Amino acid sequence: MKNLHYSALSSIADLRTGNYIQVSKIDVLGNRARLLKTPSEILMPISMTFGDVVIRLACNMGQISECTIISSSSHGTLVKAKGTLGDYSIELTFHHEEIFSMECRTWFTPTMGIRQLQLLPELLLLEGGSLSAMKPGRLYLQQDQLRSGACLFDLADAWGTVFLFHDLGELSTFAEDTRTSLAGSVRVRWPEVGLYIRSNPEGNLKRGRKYIVKHFYLILEKGPVQCEKEASRRFVSYLARIYPTIRKPAVRQENFVSIAQGCIETLSKNHGCWQRVGKFSYVNAYLNDYATPPPSRWSRWPFYHHSTVTLGG
Image 1 (cartoon, helix red, strand yellow):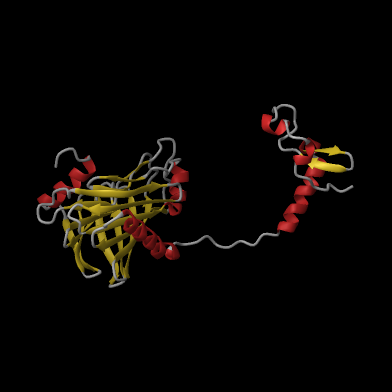
Image 2 (cartoon, rainbow, N blue to C red):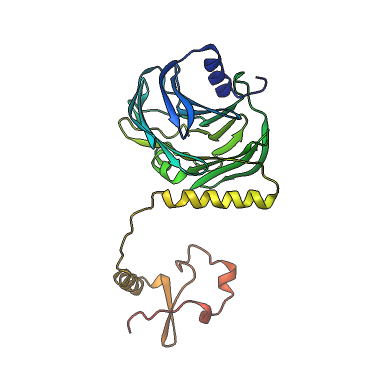
């Protein structure tokens, strides 16, 4: 229990002291799980052979007034929760495959404008029984971009690998309203793993607007990794399972001929964008408004290196 983050200490203390209400028991791909309501979180501990995987389904809600399972089956569970700061809707999907694979998508609707909302990592890895922090294993990957974030690591007892993948593209509305960058937000800070965000004080969540605040995939595969090649194989195979299920943007059809014609007409009316050399018209590599000096690498190039278009006449 030494040198852990406050969020981990708080959750572990609630579990150890029984400071929760058990809402329901859930079967997650053959593993026993419980849905628990603590004073400020919704937790789902899953009992595995190597220990307990505790999933934070909701956090920082203020005082939780209710937590209800709307529907539940072997393929997934839908949970609704109400707190003083807002309402949560949590959709769990269980993928029946040869290895443990599940997906979680969480929506949050504030009941008031909120600044600096803190999102805590969704995974808490604990020893079974004692509920102490599990010993860290080898970390293979801690990748974070603006669109996705992933972590791949071993468990210390060589049980197997844990892969967590975040679809950060689904959080774009949250990021825009709070003016918060999602880069570097998916991290391993043992024994917690996942998305950690403290939103920018200059932005705020809007009252009544529904935000996706989490969309992640969790894959557990039994068997130790023997070499780097095996770790790479597992990583690629996990992505192959996840990518087909990610929601893709709607396909838009554009009339590029019409767009191009509009660009040509605009260029013909704005002489600062092009120059006439002989019988040909050349588009400038920079805006020739004389206020902005041209980049040196372009100013040295002769005109025949520039892109050419016919500007009508």
